[in-house]
Length: 306
Image (cartoon, rainbow, N blue to C red; front, side):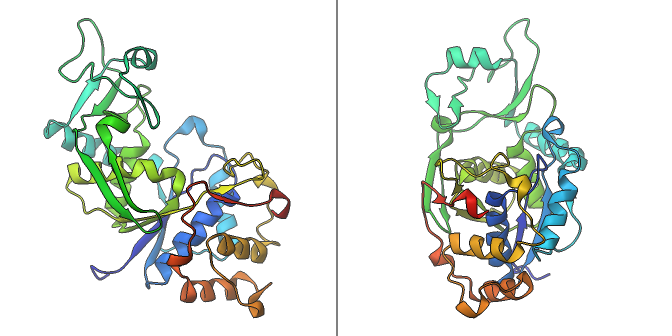
């Protein structure tokens, strides 16, 4: 593999069947990787056992195969990578970048200076050491009062001051599980991922991940955040929107076509109704990233067509 080869990925969570919003992200990431002659890898983000639904991972893999979205290499399972996450934590600890925290969520809410983008901002209570008589619960990374910025392939320049937006964030939770922000950075770096295409609901996570990449000495991938797919109620399409009823075997063509349409791609009339084996090669060759709508509010779809 050359140093310049694009390596993309799709990373679903097995908390239920593949829903349409995730399918759109899969189609977008697949096309953008393949159009560059790149690899498209698959990672199953089964990091949080209580949320994993038995059989969901196999169902997702089966759905992708029925849709013609074939991945390269073997599937990576986050549940099997705890040693890698622990090694990353130790690297950060050796650099003096992390600290143990004894605070409960209630304590943080009561003492937070102001609300952040995803909840109360951690006030720094345990930065200089645990309070007397308290035991560590979580592990946090200390963030500087500096701006993180990057150029997104759809949304353009994105800037965030981590200290103001999220504060010192968690790397290992009170229940002992490693946090998503750490795991995704470690896994992307280990796989050589250099192109990350995913939903805009993860746009605000990207500065944290860029910061972690820098702390660990990794190269930073390029990011493309696709507009979220919204139902008729204006809310994000999720596993609660009837995704279990989607028939990926008999409706593969319609679902791929709708995904491409929501991504701003115009399918020629002669390919209307064509199977994925014909639609996807056309999409890979003709995909226009500049046509992806940069809709902060997302793009709507009528659930009745799903």
